[in-house]
Image (tube, rainbow, N blue to C red; front, side, top):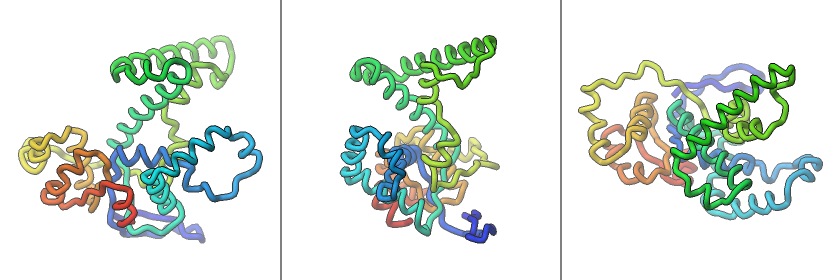
Length: 259
């Protein structure tokens, strides 16, 4: 894959690197370790004072987990070191991540306001119903604020809930997704004839449509690797290698090894 980076002098430099397709399961864990890669960097004292002690304790507990620790190493490498593989994120992974983010954000806020077990037991359909109401009520609230001549950025409960559940693109690209390359899928065709060929093996082996599309997109982009923690990918990694010539990286250690 060819992409451009800025040199210290501000000039564009083209680089040719093997590409690693980052699926949603890896994208989620990459996002969850946001900020941990800079744990040893000096922080401004005012920010430290504002930080909750219990939040810092939880972060310390999370960092002690081996898997999270390794994902933090992945972030460090992609942030601060020269890598040998370009990690790419497709619109498909991005959309699936948005779904996860909305669910995760709502459950976190709702568990703080209600009973954790009650929220965790609700189905995705029920969650979608609540999120639809949130969006509908917030739109009505914004219209009302405009009619009253008030700023739509006025802090309200609905506004805060939307902030917690709707993915902020500015934060995502500057922080959560920093270090990853976001690519477009263009000139992609999936014909009936194509479906009867290579993808039919994936369907036969019980891979869902979303997973099949991830493989086809990775192939279309010319990726040599797919990074996925999804057990279905792990189960058929030999078939993916045989059919598409793409190696599945199923652990943070395997990702680090190629980076």
